Image (cartoon, rainbow, N blue to C red; front, side, top):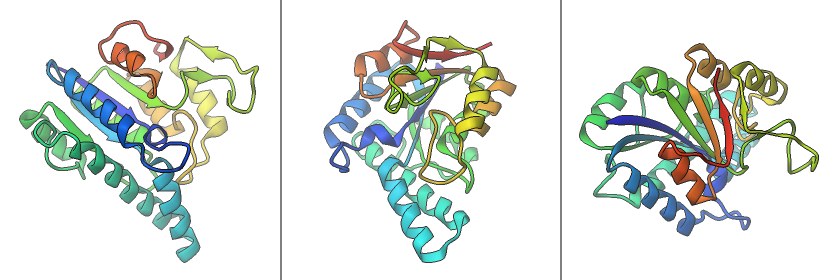
Length: 230
């Protein structure tokens, strides 16, 4: 079976009201269940709004970025547990807490969830590292935009969208936008961009709110988004 690594952005799990969007999260979970019938899926779940809240509270208490990162990791694992809870009979029953657990988990279930792993490392980087370790050729990134742009399309209506780009270009964009702080993000962080470049892992960026496009990307079909490859 083919192994698919998915970086599920926390941003698409929360609505404009700031609350966990259970209906959309359930729809995504059901799609993962469908795809897992013929593929093995390892889904790394981001923190989104919850991670920003946890990190901010930690900074206020301790004024320390290490512990802000640790708090954000807890948020990602909480989100992963929520996703896993939608599929109690299908998903591996534990959220991964180390890279070494992945092979055993995937040997028992075709759908496995993880959150963050290490302070200073985003879930983007965790996703690429899992792909490297498992020999997966592609990481599918589900975010709140329909691809990678030359600048933030929410702030710049003239931003150019890229349909395909080399790893070097992604690294350049990430280096200008990655702040290395829990709760802040570019579409893909710098370390993850460099890791994918070193192993030539293809990256597919798709809007996680558009389930049809997500399914197309997971099935290897043409989708509306951005592909990064050399």
